[in-house]
Image (cartoon, rainbow, N blue to C red; front, side):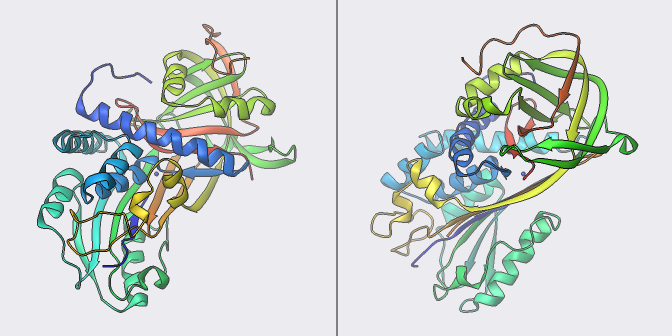
Length: 396
């Protein structure tokens, strides 16, 4: 087996208890903000990604690795070093999200492993993938790159409800029947707890980072929301129906301060901003938007320390398959987000072939949140603070 490709699909009150699900969420969020810091330097425009999707792929790959390759992957993804602890945390978070998904929204998280009939998997790896990630195993035709790509892309479209149409091409299956794929699909469709009235949406000016002004449909509503601010930023939380998931937006007061604010973002500063929220009467103006992002995560993983798995001379993936040499060739990622008056719909795909955060004041009871310039957003599970999707909307 020459290469392994890995494909993953995609998309408050802090929990003080150190339960397994919360610990798993913190691992994923640490990885999320490290990726965010790399993403933000790549573009001044729009971007979105599902850190949870990519993290699940890294976690599955970790279970298929041995020795230094496994240690390096676990460190990159901030996973527990003990296999039993990794399993307990992954299972607990999957169960937690499953319970939350039953409360008023559509949340579909699926994992799968794909291989040609010429590849033999280690049974223990398949058992671990099923127990920890609920991953199912599938076969695709050997020596048929076109048919294989069509089969996998059909799975992708189905699991993301058509939001992502085509992630892989025949070139991803050009290894004479030795390509193996690990896939994670995350799809979310959620209605706002307090929807925007479509009749109130009017054209409004949105100023991009470049200073160019464009006209976008601006949604409007007023009501009680969790809100916090400082001299340099505003923070708004908008719950989805059922209360289990929320969209959180961080709006710099001035575009000139955005880069400094973004550079300070990490799990601690994001959590700190969330703790400062108060229930306020908020007048909201938010653009209706939708866009997609595509990129190869391979270079980002390498920057974060995951290097050996891409080196055929060093990679040890024999816990997945006894056939060597094997390595990861690429880590493709695609994410899409749509936010409108009714709610949000998101999906994502990952494939592997002065202090801006100063103390927030006890803000006024009536405030305005006018998102008419670039802002950051996340979609999160409220109890664990797990970030399913995150990105920047810059109007470009």
